[in-house]
Length: 283
Image (cartoon, rainbow, N blue to C red; front, side):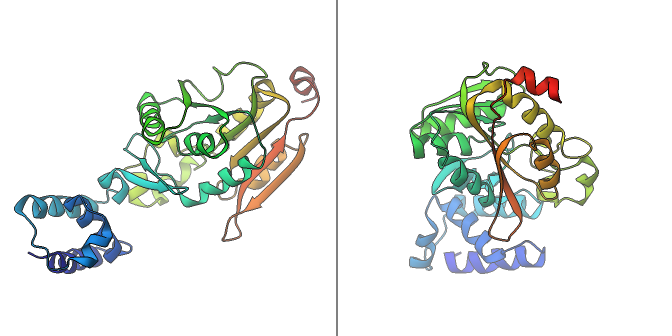
């Protein structure tokens, strides 16, 4: 069995099963089985697969045909030009989330906390790109372990705390809060792709009955956590922009940025000058 033949057979199996981008998926899985980069496949189509390589490729194809995301098979996902390790304990980082990084970098914060860090994609990237002091929280010990491993592997100095949202963050200790919170309404569970519904962690997907629960809690506690003039930058789920903007109606410099498809993707706002106690009283 040569690389060329393996790719043809793998692509056909995936295509017949309705798997998206079957050729690319076959290439990624075969390269993983060979412990090579994809470019090797193009340069060596005549490479004869060893028995163990063929067995691994067959197992990876079977897993993908059962709906397991490619990233959980290879345990890798690129984000902002870096390779992150991903496991079923964490949400697979999406390219859209890179918009959060781009907006956050502009805030020039010295102390940052990434709320619900998952794989650590936001926290690690911001630390490496800005040199800021970065903290990260996650309610899942498994996710925190993955984020810590990514920080070590990529040389980022990130302090990770297992807690619920910002409950363990000291008052007025941060210049910037970033978050890509769970925002899928529970009512939409059955409508999700099986790769998402059956394999990605539900604690990182679902934001309560409406999808707004985590936004509500993060915004409510942000004035306690942020220093005067501090910023909150969050990814927006589809249909969340109006609700989150309303939550931030008394904040300063509120802006909503679209992604490349024109969908509202990131909201940013500066904490009001009023003390948090006064904000609570006004609310």
